[in-house]
Image 1: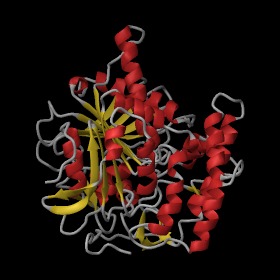
Image 2: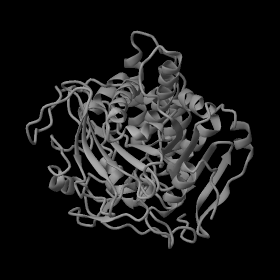
Image 3: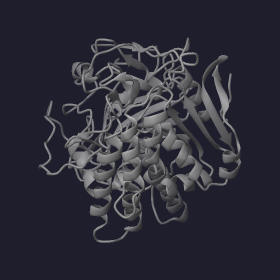
Length: 491
């Protein structure tokens, strides 16, 4: 039943075909599937000649693209990890007090999806327009009070280029750490090293966020112990939107959501019954396969076990239950005409921002590397628990119209967590989350951990609005409260 008395969604209204908000590739007809054959990686087309500078940045300053607020510094370009591997970034200084504002990292998911999606469709200084040809200034940009750094990773994602070798979240974390060491040693950005650091991500960021944050903390500890030389990262905040973190606790959520989400059933009842049996059947069911993946750590065939679990569960549960609706915004048919395709706009400005290769929304070779290792089915929950228990303020948020990483699964994952705040959190009931007196969702908070479910929002939560609230207004409030080291509260 559509909660029309709670939610009135209005999109900015675009047409993009299958490129949409999609961050999860379809392989051999399976959403998040594993390709049956592996082709040699296809190199991105080179736009212009370049010479790398290993260990340093190559930067275009103040291109005038996207952020048009007077006096706000921006920079885009590459951090060269090696002579052959380069990560693309786009940095926007805070509109207010940039010298003391925190530094926020943003990562989209995939794996292999470009963070330009978040920049142009969600929380950046500008938003893509209806016809995909231009942008408008975003009054609810997350760089209002935070320095924002959008990063295309792993290598090969978006505008990044090089050898496509990364295939696990842990490997990706190491490259991001190396990139940040380069970034924060550059004279243009070295002043940010002492500022608070936040990591925000979505979708496959349910893996990236906890893994990266835990890796940063371990590297900081090594620096403090004198066993590693580097710039410590002053990590204070972790935010994860509609993330896939712990498959064993989240996959039953597909069954629940497909039948009883706030909008409409996605498939007939017999599909639900069949999927439920596929989930619970001993030894060969989806749950058993995920558990076998978890138990295979260190085994020679671990990658094959985990990759097989991904393909099986995504074929017979995730894909089977999606129905004829958009998996990123279920009130709509598939594909939903929102958000807009950003590729035409990026093609028109790529030279001005220093891009060196053609842009890819999702690099299938990068995705396939992760699928081959079964990284999808390896839980990042232990890392998430570690980060929360380490004192990093953490927010998890979902949109209730998202199927692909739905709130049922995320809330089941949260209920399974074992942190210093979990008992207090699980005893609570949800409270209304209001923005300027208007109901926007529901939330819980305990200690430095909070969770909020936003009504009427799809997979990319900041891209939506409900009622008379503006696009991104609810997301801007929960981002701002968390970045100010506050628990969530209604306004």
